[in-house]
Picture 1 (cartoon, rainbow, N blue to C red):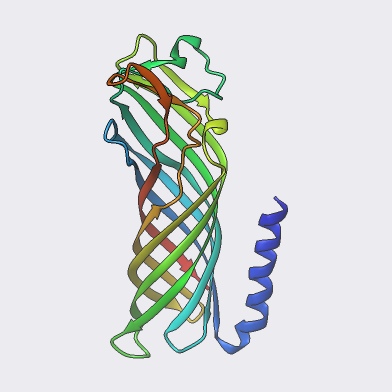
Picture 2 (picture 1 turned 180 degrees about the vertical axis):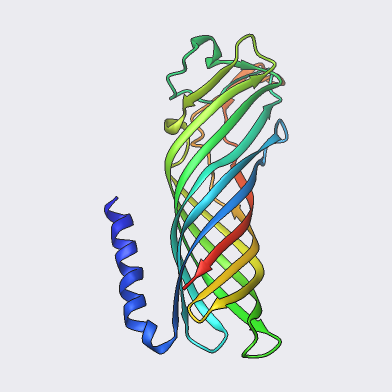
Length: 246
């Protein structure tokens, strides 16, 4: 909470210093998201997606007429997706105190559903243009957008080909606490009034750090032995950005 308060204080202070020169804009957004998982292990396949939500505050500091540095603070709810297990046996959440102990070891075609919440700090570059300088309707593009995410909450469900089903497991111990991702975005904005501009656009986000902590193990049928589960799991997300700048 102290980090969040400091970040908000910084944005408000920067707004106060730059607002009189029309070089800073401050806004809020609420963005529905669609996310899914991917891994670099062919036996652990993506098998479902999550609908979620991002919301937060953002600031834009214009260092040229149409170019700005951007920074923000927000939350990403229900990010993640579902992984289908292709191993004969696997232990994927060993540090989680599962509500059903029999689910510690999962068989083939079991599904692991991740639902994650992050506190996010995105920074990036933004270009804004239009048919004329005085036009109310403008377009924008953002690239790159780098996002630092701090895991706030992690819940998991076990589904698929299992004798038991489980929901709302606290899997925070088996998910990495830090997330790094990159992204791009584009959209349009419309000036509602002298100090209010509505924004709508699309943003793509790709996590490039490992989401899973790799504490688990899987049974290698070729060698008839257990081995450490070391796959890299990460999420992609599309967001419909809806916001207003002042």
